[in-house]
Image 1: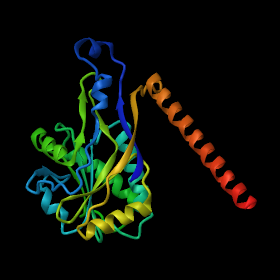
Image 2 (image 1 turned 120 degrees about the vertical axis):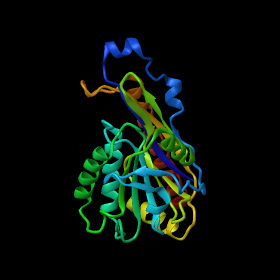
Image 3 (image 1 turned 180 degrees about the horizontal axis):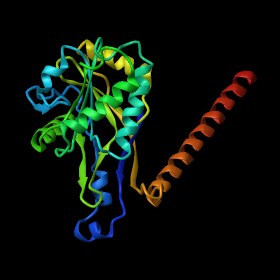
Length: 267
């Protein structure tokens, strides 16, 4: 079993008027945000979306007999989605595999109000950054109805929630690797992705096989204020706790190695 850090981020915009008419997400709400790892779960191939060219497309038709990276988020996301896609692009640029030739990428907006025009802007931005030929026809940016989005998210084990105060979505970070048949093969969590792990995951999925369940260390990044650029007290406490745990584990590892070395010399 591997351990991965998962970020769950929600941007809170300070708005006294909004706060009087709507209730912000609670700590219990945020605890429910995350992934249910449904390895081997087939996604409904018949689900239809609109792509960035305003065409109606079925999810199954976009798989094109190749493994696929499925990225759920939304295009006007102020922070987390950009970090996820930045990390993904950086990992993809390290691969010998190419989008289009070896695998597909599908970005799906979880916001039913987003339009193909918004998706087209993001597609242009990400393809320019990826900068490899042949990706245009295999990297899809989709929008959908609330019903279709909900069904896909449920099948993928993607738990998210809309926050009426900030008018944003709280959602987990990462993406999903699908087999050519549209079954879930592997989950990647966080915003930084190991290119070697990604290459192995794509190769595994291309053969129709599934990876293993990943242990998650959940880091809540809620209550970020874009005006001040600061995180809330809860986040700082969690980050500090994780840092302390890391230092303690490192110290334990060094002491263990030193003892083993001393024992070996004494023997």
